[in-house]
Image 1 (cartoon, rainbow, N blue to C red):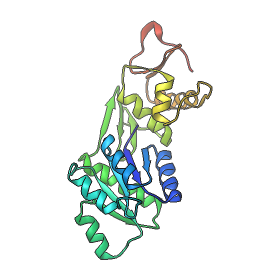
Image 2 (cartoon, rainbow, N blue to C red):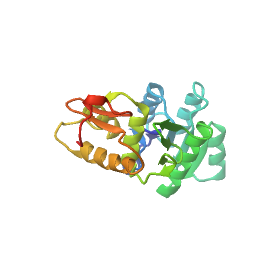
Image 3 (cartoon, rainbow, N blue to C red):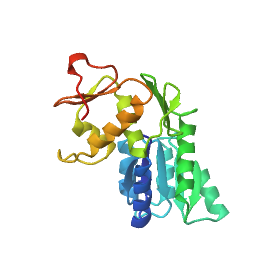
Image 4 (cartoon, one colour):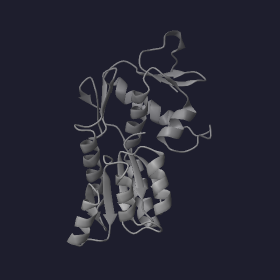
Length: 232
């Protein structure tokens, strides 16, 4: 879970590069490879940012954007395209795009633009706070009791999921499938390793907040009394 990004791009190499890179940075990313599936994705969920190619099989990106703007005028859309003429940029922006990035592009610039669009959508940025832990989605910065936490992208995404569900018992399957965007096979210890490392970093600034409930999963917040267990 995190900033939700929809990538509508038919070039497999670019789509794979963008989706993989953004997932590694903690974004939740979905991909559509043509205009028809792109339109379906645009209608089926709420997105924080849309990355849209101009040339697409079926309806092209410009037509798709104009159609989308008839029903949604607020979701930020960034054109990713090889069309770099000034007239093309003007057409794209006039059709409802919020930003325009020409191919080839640097991934770091794409990340910066996506974060800027997400901040613009949410004003000063979406900030989650619980039990002294603060996470700013727009800047991807996290703190506990005012002290910065040095988290990896996946630890940040895991913390975000906990912050969205404080006091809830979260099963391993639910956490894994939301944070890793994959089915949980019950055999991998990837989740346990990341929870242990996130727990260690949080506890360097205060008492334990991530509690293991044997056979049930994890709970973020105050210690659940007699149900509190040891490390995973």
